[in-house]
Amino acid sequence: MTTLNLKIPKKLKFLFEPHRFKVAYGGRGGGKSHTFAATLVVLGYQKPLKIFCGREIQNSLEESVYALLIGKIQELGLEEFYEAKNGKIHGKNGTVFLFGGLRHNLASKKSLEGVDIFWGEEAQTFSEATLDIMEPTIRKEGSEMWFSFNPSLEEDPVYKLFVMNRPDDAKVVKINYTDNPWCPDVIKTQAKRTEMTQPDKFKHIWLGECKQAVDGAIFGDELELVKAENRITTVKIEKGIPVNTYWDLGRSDNTAIWFAQLVGMEWRILDYYENNGKHFSHFIEELDNKGYRYGTHYLPHDASNEQLAANKTIEQQLRDALYDNPDLGDNVDVVPRISRKHLAIDAARGIFSRCFFDKDNTKDGLQCLRYYRYAIDEQSGRVGKDPKHDIHSHGADAFLTLAQSANKDTAGSITLREFYA
Image (cartoon, rainbow, N blue to C red; front, top):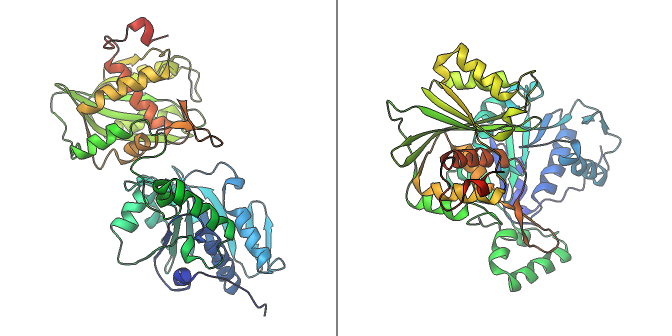
């Protein structure tokens, strides 16, 4: 029998206890990810387990915890027991580690069937939709769900679920570098320097406290006002007024749609939907499934040339769908290309004060708006002029389509020639 030298911070010893949910969160240097990886390697050595390691978005194996697990296998001297091949890690007793992204794919992943332990790393990025579908998917008797994350915003679904509204069957622990007896001195020095020069940043990065807004947040102030004025609420549909949709199109990435009514001067944001890797017919079916009485579908400028796996443009496909099914609405409008992105952002800022968001149906869309941010130079820390393109961009860009549609005939002080290319 191999003797394993496993080092675990005292706060994380609960990982060897039976709990449905095991959650560790906090600042850098607490040893969360390293301890999770080492513990799972040991548990998989002790008995055969099927372990799925997932992130919200994972485009390649390099973005997973694969390399971290391999490192722990080597540290523990278990190279003869574990074998890495074909993007998986296999143990001689039948243990297997699997890896993958979760967004939009969780329900269809056959590899999640029979999972003993699910590990969600960087869980602060998990969407509401992912968390909603995850628990019934990991349903083997005695199965466990592990989450490790550095908090970002209080509004993040995983923070609300496990920190603010802790389930009875969850063991939740906050751990920082001060709780890790093996924290390197270089980490302690960095933390001390940050504490002296940037105390607010220190609280977030090293003590795991939530920020008020993400760095470079584009709509941070607007969303704070929306929250303060209780405009994230139950939004009722106004009978007799059609529901319009506002789109951002994706080919290899996400297509996003907002559903809204304009009632007087109020924008009633009723719903939000996004998905990726789907034929455009999927989104037409989703429109039908929602069951709204539609008016106009507003598409971005590239709808006239985007095809999404068809021989017709998106605009043509949607017009054909409306012709075949009048319940889907009576008009398609392509919003012209805007000359400068910041003008569309200004237009969006101009309508936030009139927006009411449905608290249940727009959760994932609101997360996109909260995380929509300007790119930040990692070396200088300077905020750039252009928005960062990531998983949150599509929902935010669809909202810009809404703002542009509202400014199509008048752009306030911006002339149409200046507003559009």
